[in-house]
Length: 472
Image (cartoon, rainbow, N blue to C red):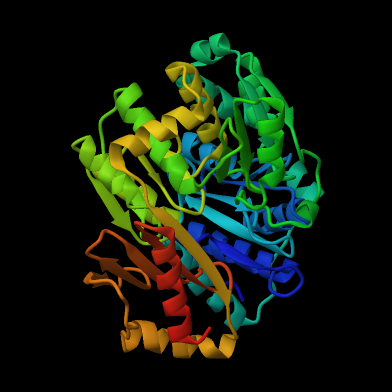
């Protein structure tokens, strides 16, 4: 069985993430491409450093080859944005990336991209699931062509287009400003795939770059490969102790980013979005809206309003952000989980480009990251943001869905409610500018409760009230 969530298909290795299901997904997408007469340009597949990622890519390619579809395989572990970039620039109808992004090491998965290098929307993934069901119900074996035979026939082509991707980023970054700034950067790829790309861009721009956790470890050092505050404590210490201008971390497949400022202070993904939007408008002179999902800071709304611009809210799932950015011609879009997209590059998350732009910001402004962030807070104020992930017994999920989404019950809250939205889960907006959001994770068996309030104790309180109300 193959079931897509908000970030593609992800499953525990050996349970649902199996060779049989990878072949099923490939056969389903192959049939979809054939039905759409979209096979002429083939398909590109990349992979990250997770356990079985490379083998999974090859198993999938063998199925596409048997269906007569030419497959371009990125033959070294690489960032997810590279696969998206190749799909876009070579005008391919579809692309794939074998990764479970920031999920625990026991997971792996597949992300699907559509024409233009965009994250596949729910219509596309539902279609793939439909074709997969037809194949399963037929009971017929899934055809596969031996890898070496497919290579010999030209149906599998191994590529490594890293230079195309890096040159595209270098072309839109002010490398002259970076070269003159003589910045020191500490990089933590979190055992993932970003080191080569980020170091190539920054070292060629004369930055001093030192790396932590750059080696290949499919267990990610026993930690979650997500650039959270807890996970970046060593990076914070390193930056503060040895006088780096910035610390940069990326998740396992390098589409998300985490940052530590020059004082070793962790900047949340919300903070990074705020800082980059501020830089793009105030210092680079760009004009345009910003897009965020329902679980991302409303400080972006204040900042956009201060610039005479609009902040648009969309459901969770980066496909919604990239779609809204195109619709509104927004200059930046992102989410509190660490992914962001910037106009003029790919239509999805790219931690490598974000890292380069942050370094450019320090060079162009001549200011420390801490100074820039304090400057923004002086302009639009600050809030406290809290996020909690709660695991639950699978048999209890229908009860939570009924309570939250069907009966639409809300606990007694000590804050005056402005309105409630069910755009994605339940989000309660308070008249003091705060809010609380309750939704199920699309990639893991978790209930997520996020809150942003003027004071941290209020944000913690509203999360506690909701947790007790649901009995989690």
